[in-house]
Image (cartoon, rainbow, N blue to C red; front, side):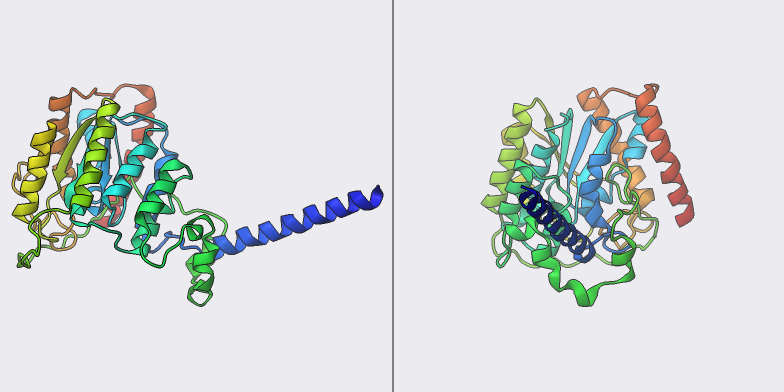
Length: 341
């Protein structure tokens, strides 16, 4: 009997040591996104949110760089969050919406349409920056299966050590500094602030399209997103965020407009309609690809009023929980903005 107990204790301790070492090694070699490629933290930060959101923005860098939830609340009392990530593909946006609906149901979902140009997975590195931060569940599993590039396998997402074991020669001080801790918040409800001013110097010359239409694969996922919103009583708004590059082709714009008309959706092309007054000499951080904080605040002031008027969004200012949440966020936001000026 004693021998059996000692054997059980020994096996338990051995397993504890093994899994503890496995966890420690995984933490060490997995990308941290703490001081470099900080966009990789955006998806995970959503789960730290303390208050619900009436507006959810989905898409790539053209949402997480171009819209300021702090401004939407400060100007209109509109509560919002961005679930954006670098090169977020349309099926990833769909599954992030599905994941969000487990805990809250926004009144409006805003989707930026640039990624509709991609018919298939593009990059494992960008996949990781979206998928690794998602919590485990049906939505994450679906997103991984839809996103894997050639050569990737599902198990490497379950056990990241299988993928990153060869990062030993690439480890930096960042990896050791954040070995057993996460970096503090980098975003403001998903908004990644940029304060630099780098004016646009020229308009890119577009390359001819082999196929003038957006891929059917992408449009099929957009239909799924529209259906999911309809089933949950959510207003879906399609936008093309203002940018000079990548070039947004008129043929693509026509496809999105036709889709919006067929499904009774609002579509705002913010390149064509510059009611926000974006100036690519002062409001961009990288020569017209993304907006800086000045541009994001301009765009958010205009778009917030459009959303509030169109969908009757509630002004939550004066409600204690929201004022406390956004008050703390605004203090950090203004400090970073001042530091960048």
